[in-house]
View: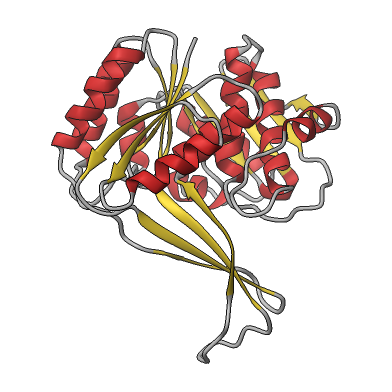
Length: 309
């Protein structure tokens, strides 16, 4: 079984620090990190860091794609790239000592549905029945959601297990796509179901509402409290361990990586949830969008309590 991540709209994640930041004034900042990112890239990097084989299919803008691919190669990632006219976008996260972090995201390259034809042609070479394919992040400007759903539908018909974590998809789009897994947070699941999700019980109610519509597995991230999973094997909660969190950016992507890693090992759904929370928590223990450390993942696995509700 293979794990394949798809990133149509990657980004350079730049982190900078400004001491005594003052809004509406000029502030001197220093760059602390610049990473090649995007939700699918983050998933693949987390898996690679933990020794789990995977392939990252990434669309890169021709203007700055070389440096992006060099960054991925430095992390030892297995990459299948598709070049497209334009420039990979940048995300800037401003850290300061006197306010919460601020994130600014820029638009990337424009594309059209012919990009999906090239993506699908590559996936037909590597994706087989039983494989897991993650489709995460927003579509580039110009790529239609209807064509995206059609492509994913054809892959699903071939037996590929589809994971969707994309704000390009609304509730009805997810119901139409019927993916193997979705991973909304509290805000997203509340938007999808009109249920105010504030604890594990309300999360269970919201998740069940989507599973009844045909989505196979719903994992809801609940921040420092942990996560909840409603699956074919029942509903489970995983309580997050106490950690020294340095950054939450990319933690949700890492949790998807952990879920897929456990699935690759053939573990039951309760363990998939344990792995998800372990990967996500370990990612919070690293700065910026750096991946979880394998030793931290192993240590956290033994501290995470999973129970059926």
